[in-house]
Image 1 (spheres, rainbow, N blue to C red):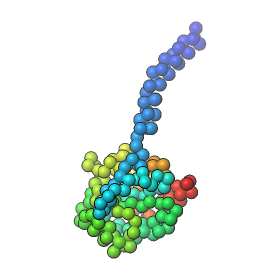
Image 2 (spheres, rainbow, N blue to C red; image 1 turned 60 degrees about the horizontal axis):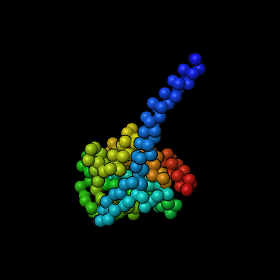
Image 3 (cartoon, helix red, strand yellow; image 1 turned 180 degrees about the vertical axis):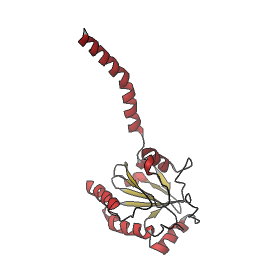
Image 4 (cartoon, rainbow, N blue to C red; image 1 turned 60 degrees about the vertical axis):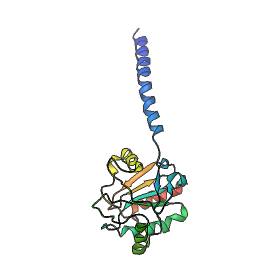
Length: 190
C-alpha cells in the first residue's frame, strides 16, 4: 500500500508540475534572440541583426563627447583584426549618459571617423536605458540585468546563434583579454 501511495503521489506531483515546467520551457523558447532586432542606420535604412546570423556581433553604445571616446579607435583596431573572420561591430550612439552625444544622424559616424578612424557600422542615435530603451536593450536587460549599460561604451557580445554571451562595462578595453578571448572563441566555433 505504501508503494502504491508513493506512485500515485509521484504521478500527481508530475501531473501538476508538468504544465508549469512546460510553460517555463516554452517561455524560454519563445524569448526572442538578438537576431530578432534591427537598428535604424545612420543616414537611412536598417541594420537587421538577423543579417549577421552565424557571426558574432559586438554592439557598443557610444557618445562622441565621452571620456571613453578613445575607444572608438580601439574598437576600430578590433574591427580591423576580426571583421575579415566574420565579426560584426555596431556602434549605437546614445545621449543617455551625461548628455555626451550632441550630434545626430550621419554626423556622429563622420565625427568618429575623423577623430578616431572608425570605419565600422553606426546606428542612428538610440535610447539604451529605461522604459523607452530600444527593444534590443530592453531584451538584453531582461537577459542579464546585472550587465546593463551604466555609461557610454558598454559592450554586448552576441553569439553566432543570437544568444547574449556577455556584457562588458565601459571600463573594459575592447582589446582586453576577456573580450578578445570571447570573440575568438565564438569565431572558432563557426
